[in-house]
Length: 80
Image (tube, rainbow, N blue to C red; front, side, top):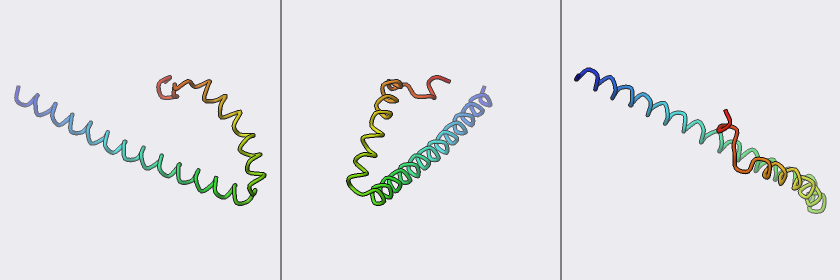
């Protein structure tokens, strides 16, 4: 009985370690993605100028709204 408890504890520690490692990589990838999006937006704004960036933003607003409504908070992970 004592050996079973040790096996379960070792398994839980392994699951916790894997979860922490996965959480770290998820956080890091989200952070890097956000940084790239921010830098990209700044570069596009600088290249287009205020007037053209406004047109660009308005052009992108319709697809963004449509995708948001279609998703309704359901992400791809919950569908798999």
